[in-house]
Length: 284
Ligand code: GUN
Image 1: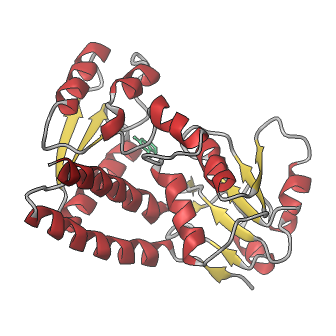
Image 2 (image 1 turned 180 degrees about the vertical axis):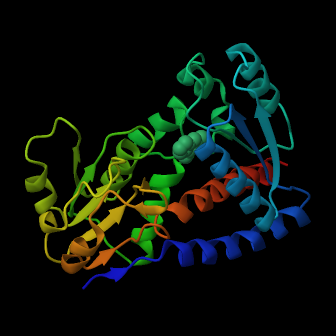
């Protein structure tokens, strides 16, 4: 039976340490600041944004929320990004995705200063990850890496199978595992024989956004299973991308949903914001 990797507990422990770091930074005259931009009223995005605000407040980070109507033009959004790029109180800028259809997401992400891109989505920061000199790392994949670190898992030479190839999770987490000398396979909707790939993995990272798509029976005995999915089924129940009970029978470690990767994402956003503010102290 697998041991749980408790993301909620790890996140709480990290946030406590970060609150102490923020106190130190404030004593040096630098209050870390995060700007969160939400366009429109997607209900899930609203929930995420309010969680981010609360997490900032609890850690002592200054947060500036910019809630814009769905009709906001791309030009108006770009002007706000430019203003935030030049705002000295702001160390990190997060534009919540998805954006409304009339706005070109890439264009907006490219406009964020790479030095304030705490989401790690700017092509400059993505490029740094690809070339093995990471700067800001995207929050969810970074959270996954911290969870593996928390169980002292050594990725060197291990088979990692990532299910999902999104820019937010699949691709960056694969690159982060590669940087730790794992042998990485990225599977996606066109992959032939997914069970065979998952079946040889020492570490399975599921990030497809489909409820319980990865079956417990596919998991190799003793594998580590990281489930990035959060899917609502029926009215209330949340399930991951992995069939949890059956996978837990075979895995050595597994992340629960909820309470696994979820709480780590915001934690790493705070982490990146503090990292950014720290460079402001060094520059002083
Ligand atoms: N939407 C879903 N996940 C994310 C994230 O990590 N950052 C941003 N900006 N938007 C998201």
